[in-house]
Length: 414
Image (cartoon, one colour):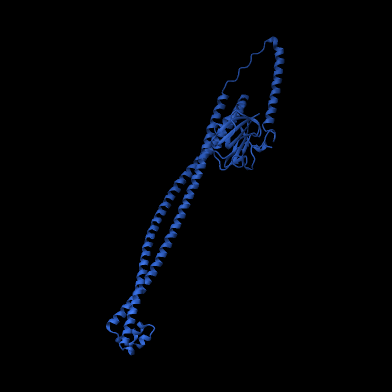
């Protein structure tokens, strides 16, 4: 379909068709009313889809808020765990220091016991302490030897302290291992939970971005269709106004004296009119669809990425030619520039009127290098390829119109 303002430029031949008679005007009016109905139906569908997409956005935003809140809670929990980890690490370090002190205490007790046994040996108790001195573990030997009685009460207290210290050191070591295991398990569990929640948040954010992108596309399409709707309605009004104009009054009849000549003149005029009509009919027949390559040239170089025809439930009224940004866009045929400027979804656009009922349209330009009223020749550069307006990639959207109706450009280009 054709964007607003551009319709007025692309349908100049319609006024000629109206002057032919009421039947032609009625036909044009019916065609425009049909286009208007199609546009309004498509606009209604777009608005329904937009409403659904916006509802979906609300749902996705609510889900994202829930995910964000959950992330915040988990991050808070992770922070608490990290503080707990720090406290556990402090406890572990304290236990290690305490264990080291106990080990030193054990060493001191053993040294004191060895000193005491050596003293008893020097005092002449070698016979009783011989088995203890020869033992690899003096403490175990004292615990089982009958010579324990040879050690006085203070010596026994030292030995008991030694055994108590050993037991405490072993208990501390076991507690240290348990605390380290608990610490590792807590950290591992919280890190897994945080990773899961972060993945959920990223997924929700991605879904929301996709829906918002679709809404932007639909809003652009809605704006484009609203422009079509307004332009077609204005065209219908113009057709109705011109069709309602009174027909010119017939010329007065000739005098009786000139009857013969008048009759001959009328016959001649009728013949001439008939010949003129036939010639005009022949001209329309030959110009309605010009032979391929006759005065035409390609408007740009590059592959065709989208052809003429139905696309996404609507007519794609031209062809898309892709190339790099700024690539030359040339006039496809000699003519006069009728429009040069920004036009809604078409972006930067140039429209050229050509001899006969032809117009060409060049859309999504990155630059316009001509102006309204300028004469251009086939192959003359009129702009640079771009991606302005409703566009998803650098390309030229090119249309050919015959008497205001789009035609497949491939039927004209060489």
